[in-house]
Length: 200
Image (cartoon, rainbow, N blue to C red; front, side):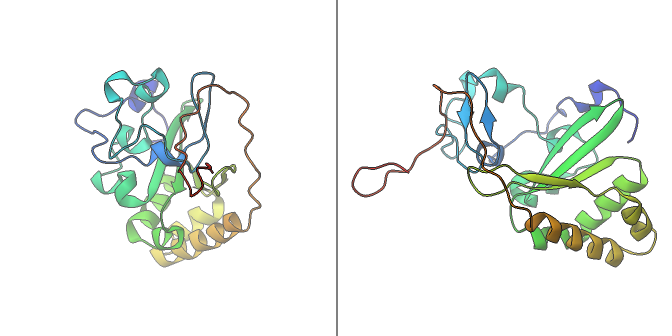
């Protein structure tokens, strides 16, 4: 897993988004042709993408880690796992960020999550744990494929879970800064209508 080519991160055949729309809400986008705050659902996400046949290039070319990595089975689909995985290569080394988008504590306590963290650490993958932060704020992440994780992986799953819980507490204590969207003119964020006609 630690040495891969760029071709290894293309979308896997037969692995489609289905009903999953996690990336349509969790991610912040600040591009000239699309702007959207993190934690705000895209206005075109209505039980699925209503403009899928006319996707902007940014959406068409995006694949989460679950759609790219064979090591992640169907249970890792973001809407099922509560984890939005991002994968990229840096100097030939695989980096995976696991952003906890559902119940963070419940997720890190799952056996499959602890086993994945241990396996990636033992395989030389740079693994990060992340939280998206409140709507309109930046997220945060920290490296968890550390020497401590390596040692915990050699002891037991329980030791890995204990370390994951400690790292999650560090993330949750972080003061998430506001995200400033610098581009304008193409806000894809869904704004809910509130009484009186004002928008949030």
